[in-house]
Image 1 (spheres, rainbow, N blue to C red):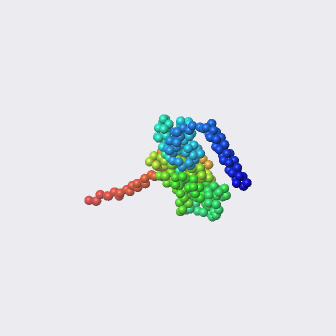
Image 2 (tube, rainbow, N blue to C red):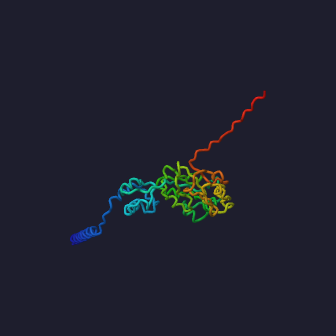
Image 3 (cartoon, rainbow, N blue to C red):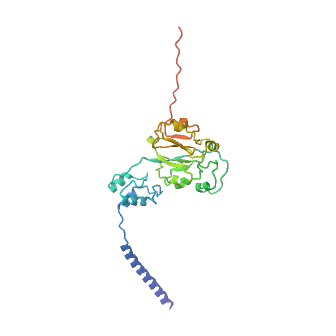
Amino acid sequence: MATSTILYAALTIGLIGMIAAVILFFVSKIFHVEEDPRIDEVQACLPGANCGGCGFAGCRAMAEAMVKAMDTSIAYCPGGDYDKIGAILGITAATRDPQVCVVRCNGTCENAPAKVNYDSAVTCAFAHSLYAGESACPFGCLGCGDCVDACQFDAIHINPETHLPEVNEGLCVGCKACAKACPRGVLEIRDKGRNNRRVFVACNNKEKGAVARKNCSAACIGCGKCAKVCPFEAITVADNLAYIDYTKCKACRKCVAECPTGAIHAVNFPEKKVTVEQPVEQPAEA
């Protein structure tokens, strides 16, 4: 009796499985969607980090969108090979200047000494929701490393001495993942600039000058001297903070010398040669 019961149960389960398989087969045939083979080819031209910096869920979603629209300008991935993508789609691919992440904070342990000790969950998002930061600057880097976790290219790390993020320009592709992860907007994606040289304000503090300077000696005080000296109108001052428009900046560096707090940084420029005047020899008296 027990044997026949087990046999009937096995046959019933097997029959149900066969019926389900037949149903699934016909359903798959009815709802089958032919996928454009070019999607796989375009996806192979992307880095595969699935960082989301392009605005899509991942590299495949971006590839599907470009193939469907037959347009590469709808999404930009700095790590993608757009020449190959254009050849695959038979169009001229849109190109952009290479970009890199810059750190708009110079609140090092020396410039912005700690006033409190943070002892809780080590994430910037959590710390930002609790307090202003160890230096009491509500706009500065918290140094917990959310940007490091977000980067899929190992291009950013926290300096243990300064507690600020440092970007490896050779590895950074400007995907914006780190910038999106920063709760304070300290990280910005900018054009690398000609010969990788760029000028930017390494401060994000919108407090009045005296308050900002109290917490950080390298803070921008919104004095406007940099804007006045800029011959290209590339600098604006709003909410007590100067900002340099990299599309207008010609990297003349006049603003760097004018900034009283050293908040403006010039990157990858050669050191200026200091000319030493030689003493003029006086002719010997007869």
